[in-house]
Length: 105
Ligand SMILES: [Ca+2]
Image 1 (cartoon, protein in one colour):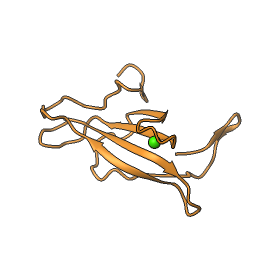
Image 2 (cartoon, rainbow, N blue to C red):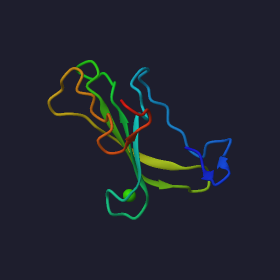
Image 3 (cartoon, protein in one colour):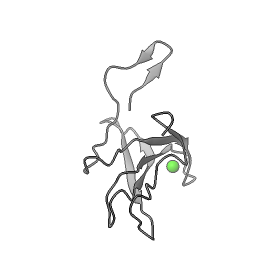
Image 4 (tube, helix red, strand yellow):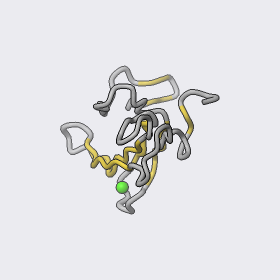
């Protein structure tokens, strides 16, 4: 993630996450500025609709809770949400909670 201002984005990220599964399309949809667990610390959800679990392209949602910066960089608690009834091509996290990064998809 990059800080942004009216003149553009910072050239260096203040936080990053590496999805371990290539082709999962992590970041396809994003919703931030959330308070999911009531702590008041910011939370973020990110979709990876082509994540392969039990089935191909069943999708996954990542929940990053309680972003904090203890002085050594930003950290968050990471949880994943998977469907209880895996289905090939279901693409959980495709964009129901935010705007897809690519219009018309
Ligand atoms: Ca929180």
